[in-house]
Every structure is written in C-alpha cells, then in structure tokens.
Amino acid sequence: MTRLLNSHALLWALLALPGIGMLARWAIGAATYGEVVSASGVWATELLILTLAITPVRLVFRRGRWCYG
Image (tube, rainbow, N blue to C red; front, side, top):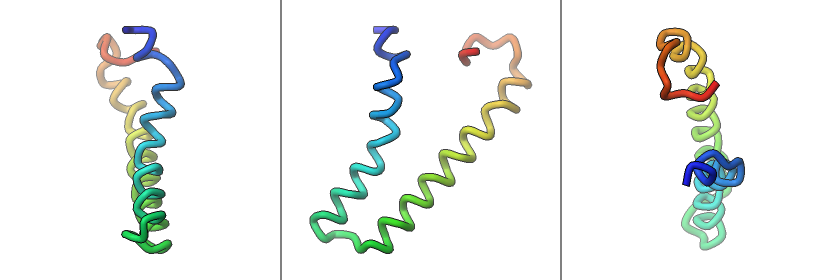
C-alpha cells in the first residue's frame, strides 16, 4: 500500500483529475472554451500557492514526520 501511495503515477493521476473533469464538461457542451480556460487558470493558481507554501511550513515544523524530505 505504501508503494502505491508513493508512486509518481498516482500523483499524476490525481493532478489530472481536474483537467479530465474540465475536458469532459467542455466535450458535452456544459462549459464553453472560456470557462474551461478560466477554471484551469484557477486550478493552476491554487496548485502553485500550495506548492510554494510547502517550504515555509517545512521550516516551521522541522522535526515533523508528516512530510517527505
């Protein structure tokens, strides 16, 4: 189980889920191209903020075992 949780394939699959959902909504006509581009920009911004926040959190909790590194 830990091998699966540490796999790169699982990470990429999780990161692809929002894109698959947006693509599906666009394909069935539930969302316009502009809505999909806007939603992907929001997701990209949220992921960027999350990744940039990891280093300060790791510095605050140096002895914590919750984060790899």
